[in-house]
Length: 381
Length: 106
Image (tube, rainbow over all chains, first blue to last red; front, side, top):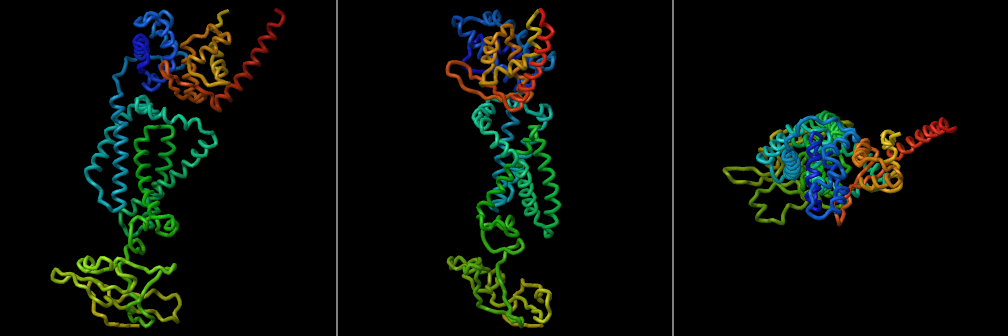
């Protein structure tokens, strides 16, 4: 277990390990770690190359030593035969968790930055790897001792010892923030699911899904505190939620706080209204007459540029032109395989009389904007 | 009278007390107890007791690498451990006082 111990100590420890093999390997490793310094010291007083006999003379047979230790530690009496080594299975479970978490991160970022659709192969791999861990997780204890005993886990853990030495106020405070994170990640996942589902009744779905995800998230959080096996579900979920946070930060703090910010900040560019991209704006005066060449500005006086509805070749020909803030833009239509730009307003509106307070918003009377008509003001009001 | 029988009941208290002022690895604790006069205390019982107290949440542990030998796992008393130590010490003092009263005239 340690390259600095002599062969005699090594074989003494091996016989102890054998005698304690019915216990969780993690606990056995901890016990042997406690015992080793004294064994090593006694062995160091002997001439090099001496066997296990001096240790047995001083400490008794390893099996008796282990039995005495077992009684004092309150471990169950061990009679069962030694188990086959499970460290291979434990290592598989650990590394599949690591790989799954990495895949989940990449997938989440890819899908939500619209860089790619869900990649079927990683999704399949992810599910398969998680399923592979289940038989092991069903067999092991809540502290997952076989994984805790893996040397890579112990190496990482020994680098994190400083956490235990932090002031108690700090660790208690951080711990008290955990339920807040459970709520936050539930919210993120619920919003992400709603965005992915693409349904129209977003609010209702968000409410129902949100409630379910919050309950699940808090339950998982509470459970995984005491039963580390749930980490195989919690860690990938946390990674996904963390990846969902990235576009939020990328979207800038100024966007946080508005109505649809979480949804709205996910797409990188453009103008959005109720979760749908706005590509053109048509304006009408109070008589219902369409206005042309109107220039729009936002509340800070910045011109409200939008990516236009121009034909692709038109855009490529004039890359600088996106096209300022003059509205309405020409509509595009495909005719005989060619994109054509059509000036004018594809529909007419009825503007309610100012004398009727609380009137319905102007309603388009031509519901087929796909067939733009020439500029012909057709006020019907 | 066999002191090892007496020790069994108070080994928890003794181990907690040995860690009261300073963290220590298993062999440290054993030597402190021996040095304090508990010469009969068994190696394995001390290591076992440390594990039991640790699993009961009364101790925390951390590993310190050692240059000349295997690394050492230090144990330290946490808040519940100190509470337990204080409580057990009170019980012990009352018990010892009662025994002393019983044996006063000897």
